Image 1 (cartoon, rainbow, N blue to C red):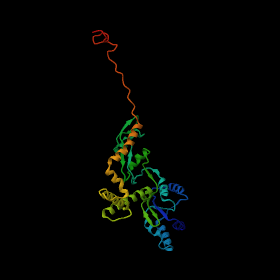
Image 2 (cartoon, rainbow, N blue to C red; image 1 turned 120 degrees about the horizontal axis):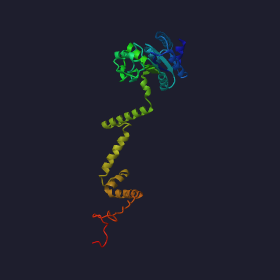
Image 3 (cartoon, one colour; image 1 turned 60 degrees about the horizontal axis):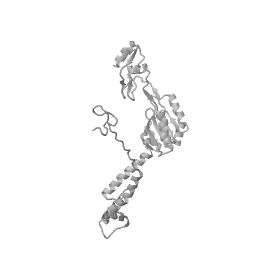
Image 4 (cartoon, rainbow, N blue to C red; image 1 turned 90 degrees about the horizontal axis):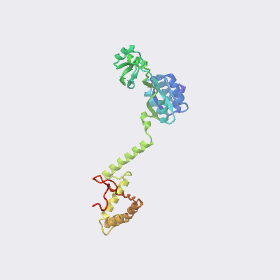
Amino acid sequence: FSKMTTMLSTYDKVFVVGVDNVGSQQMNQTRKAMRGKAEILMGKNTLMKKVLADFLEANPGHFYAKIEHKMSGNVGFVFTNYDLPKIRDLILANRVPAPARPGAIAPMDVTVPAGPTGADPGQTNFFQVLQIPTKIVKGQIEITTAVNLIKAGDKVGPSEAALLSKLNIKPFSYGLSIDCVFDHGSIFSPAVLDIDDAYLSGMFHMALSKIAAISLQIGYPTQASLSHSIGNAFRALVAVTVNCDNYTFEKAEPFKAFLANPAAFAVAAAPAATGAAAAAPVAEKPKEEEVDALDGGMDMFGGGGAKTGDY
């Protein structure tokens, strides 16, 4: 009683965890990994409710009143004041491979891989009952094709459990599973802990963009749309000014000058382009010397090449 009362008074954050199929040795390893950062509380739900009721009676209006409905089933509580994502990682880190036991509900699909089994040919009927294709290779049974033996959510049968044990396959892994997170009276999913600063920044910018778009559409100025409104107003003023001969303002002068004499801007850009072209001269391709195919060789009649005075 005093231990739980001390935890309720000391810590403000709690992980509600499921402890199905978790052994005492595995629990002790988890306690050791979280030592100095968090404490695990296990006990009968009725006793924990009684301690919580006494605590709330002594501290009326305390936020721990919202956690009472979570004290049901095979659950435990991890109390902490440490960084929640780091404690979450410590809770989920310690998982132990476990065999498939008859009657257990499969948390995932179980596939038997193709390959040698080490079983002698006399056990062929055992595989045939489970409709697993096999062949005899070098005096032992070999599975020819991978077989999906158990589907997630199905109950493990005695034959499936015996086969997996014979093949030394431990398909499942068990450990503490997080049901929810309790932080200063707020209860939320552990998936919330995956939200980091980058995600929040991206969502904030997306919300600002939507607010700015709505504000511009309905013509209602807001801080999010102010910069866009100023930009639109400036473009509208420039569009009016360039069509007026007797009015202008400083920021509109470059636009009016360009429309008045576009060639001047083209001439100004030309030297830069010429300099870039001069900076990378094209290497002149060497000329290939033409060689007469008959020079010094035989002519078409089998004689020597043509000489002056032969005609």
